[in-house]
Amino acid sequence: MANYSIQELMIVAASREIRDGEVVFVGMRLPITAYGVARLTHAPNAVGLFETGVVRYAPANSLLYTMGDNANQLNAAWTAGLIPVMSLLQRGRVDAGFIGGAEIDRFGNINTSYIGDFKNPTTKLPGSGGAADIAAMSKRTLAIMNHEKRRLVERVDYITSPGYLDGGDSRKIAGLSGGPAAVITDRAILRPYGDNNELHLTSTHPGQSVEDIRDHTGWALQVAPDVTETPAPTLDELTALHTIDTDGFWR
Amino acid sequence: MDDKILSLNTAIAEHIQPGDSVVLGACLEPEVPFAAAHEIIRQKITGLNMIAPISDVSTDMLIGAGCCSDITGAWVGNVSSGLGHNYRRSIEAADPYRVTVHDHSNFSLGMALMAGAYGMPYAPMRSLLGSDILKSNRQLKIAANPFSDTGEQVVLVPPLKPDVAIVAVQRADRFGNNHHWGSRGLIFEAAMAAKKLILLADEIVEPDVIASDPSRVLVPGFLTTAVCHVHAAVHPAPMTGRWQRDTSFFGDYHSHSRTRDGFLAWLNEWVLDVPDHEAYLKKLGHRLDNLKITGSALAADVNYAAE
Image (cartoon, rainbow over all chains, first blue to last red; front, side):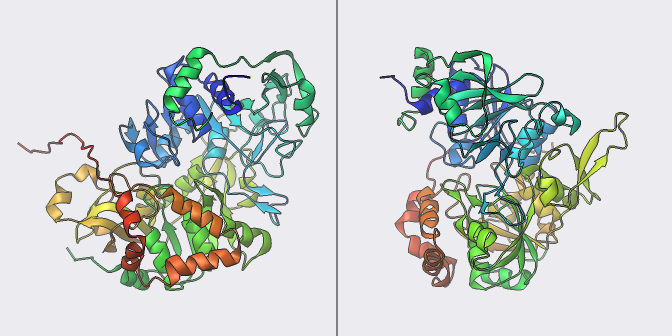
């Protein structure tokens, strides 16, 4: 029996995507915890951004339900507005941003708006929030998803947050740089691979077979030649995580 | 200067007309002026275009109560619990009616309010290229950057000049001068862009308190239309230094609003059968006491001496 939960593995995997000194939109819940782990391990100088206008050098001292919670304001590096903080994206000063979503497709496009035709949808999802902006303008988009066939789909019904659009250089032609760098799921890590920028299986979580992962993916998932197993959390990483997650929320 | 103090009921009745465009809760998650949303619902004002990037469940509530015809926003739901059930019913099943949605991202809505605030004909931005938001909101247009040698494409966002902005602040004086601290979302742009500004102040203070720290002023009082003294106007949202978030209240709203009947029962209990905000606070009772911030984390003194 592993000494960590799958959520803890996802948090640690997400934390490894943050490099020291980077400026990162950290979002809520799992990514903000990942930011905390990165800061306590390999990235002590990573800066965390929140769309409300908050900038932090360290996560808040208590579990947040929203980025507007009081604890997120206390001892922040900056409590500005949405435009100053999101303009850091447009200015090219944001290295990475975490986003989630209801659906992601083989080119990393994410839908958080409409299932079905947007004029007459079968399901109305809450919408972009800041995700479309983060996906369009950060250097690397990091997506966190549950690995289910209905979520990892061939083509999203509506592109809220652009990934590599139709693949190849279509994102560049649309006028965007950056793009999805990793999709971290509860089964695997997918990354764009090859000239077509299609998401490939690059890392399987311990105990997951390639077959199982492909069975839970809504397109014919290709396997990168250098596919590896996601390294289990190290003692240092788990210690850092437990320092933040004192209540065992993620255990 | 004119004394601008009004009761919340009077401010809403006098300054919000059916069909108005109204920014409410442009701070995203904190400082959502729920007391004003409740009063709009009690006064049965209809046909509103509600504008907000994210305004936690206040937008969902106003849709369910039948107050809005249009939503101009980036996100409508329940921040800690998930989807907005009234929003879903409205769009998916026209239950009880369908609102028209003007899709934005947080940044594009910010650009729209900024353009309105600064009197700009439009705001150019790099976001939303490649996003289907440009298909579902045809008011956003792609154009060539006239200063680019490479044919760079940009997105042009038309200005928003809402009829009314409703903003919650920690304190204000009777002339509408005010202090707000903590993250601001889009409340500055909303206050500057709107034709009328209604402030809900947690506390009314003497003018010299506000004048002692002009750098903390959101906008000066000459831009304020009305100032209402509304204690805990943001409940269940948080307010920096004043009120903690009542997260289980959001959870209760989420479970009750799962069905239309459940929502209507919730709305009766917490809004329609409650005559005013004072009665709402009384109904909350000890629950509110437990949310009051009693700790102290004071900023360092700031000296503005002139000589």
